[in-house]
Length: 292
Image 1 (cartoon, one colour):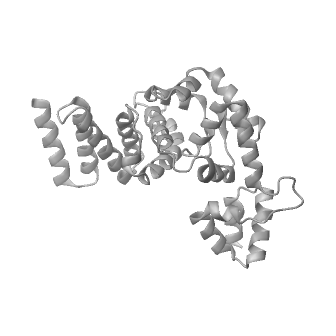
Image 2 (spheres, rainbow, N blue to C red):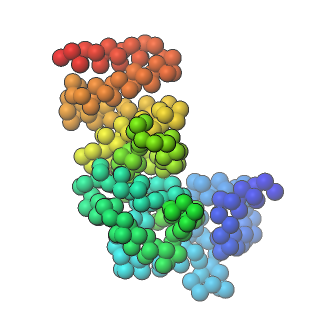
């Protein structure tokens, strides 16, 4: 019973998905735990093997969403690009101010910068996705979400392997991290964490040689480290700070202020973890650098 509840939740209570899943499990003799395992590891292949339902015009949710996506691409190419980008963010809680703040690090990406500079442009783009039922409006918070199964489909079908979108997603979230001087910054951080978790998980899977770097991605990685540190996610904070440090050293050199700020933050992180030797090494390096 618990497994079935988990499966229904994972499919977001989507009727057509539930019907197709039930038919697949019956036809193949697949247990609920096994189906969940396959869903997590081989989503795209599982969807391809989904039984066609003759009671539905398009036969499968995969076909239905692809038709909708193709129509969106024709009607509003920016909306299609936004849907691709969304694959590397959490499926819930996208709002205009998030993109507006994040766009400051994405000047090289013209379509996103244009989308985020004016709220009316953002709403026009979202309206296209709403019209094709690919996203949902959350009026209580003036934000938008994608059904979790649609989100899975986007990730495995229209966005798979797009390294530039992973970097863009990280840049958007990294630049949206609030400073502690901002009112109720902790509430903003809580909204950002699901998106930060999602985009960095995808970042870790990238081959560094294939990653397309935006000029300010190092600042974004630093911002993500700052966010993770605040939220007590020390392993992720260290990974982000180390990425930022490596990027700053290559771009600006070991004595640049951005490099040394990141070194200081790593020192604070190691001190918080009780790693005395590592913290001392970072502090000593920062001190030597500031003396020069």
